[in-house]
Image (cartoon, rainbow, N blue to C red; front, side):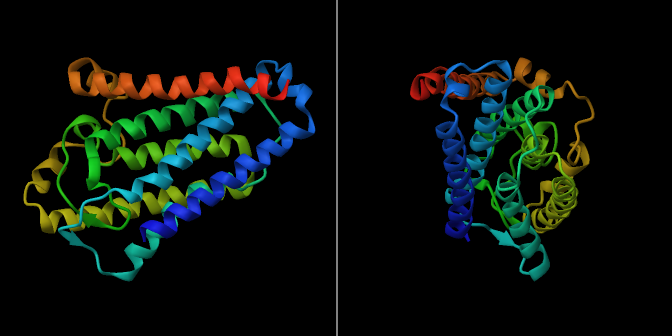
Length: 252
């Protein structure tokens, strides 16, 4: 399943990059003398590229599972869930709006930063299907049991803030339902394979943290999380800065 998911996400990413390049070629003056609205819209688009690229790369590096769900429905639902975010990139965008594009930047960049930070703790235990590799309880997993699913939803919100349509809203509702079901099926596998999971489940919330400031507290209290988040944030904002600086010169 790794290669098809990678190729599908890569197709959606390349398709949108080519479409954006075509828009720049049609009206280079707009980007050569970009105002705040154009810059924010461009950052929103770049942030969603980062998010989809993250989803494309995730399945490629994983340990072999020690247990998995063999039922068809959980595996099919997991596959559909993974395919929805790249598909959202292919939807037609709404007319530019500074407020919504700014919110899309915040959601998309936050999802990318927090998603990469979570992966640095999850490592090669990442799963697409309901599978068990090892129990991770450090970093963001101290706060909720499924932080990566939470940040994936945040990334989809960032994409759909640029779409703002009924199909986009329906896709968001669908992915919320599927992510919750996917997490439940995954927990059933973890419960069978890892005895320590039952105690962990009793202590840590499912998807939504009890305190919204928990992630800030994590960075304050955990030196490893603080160091890794600094590396991730500097990389992400560095990439965004390169795009903002280089784009006017490329089309000028």
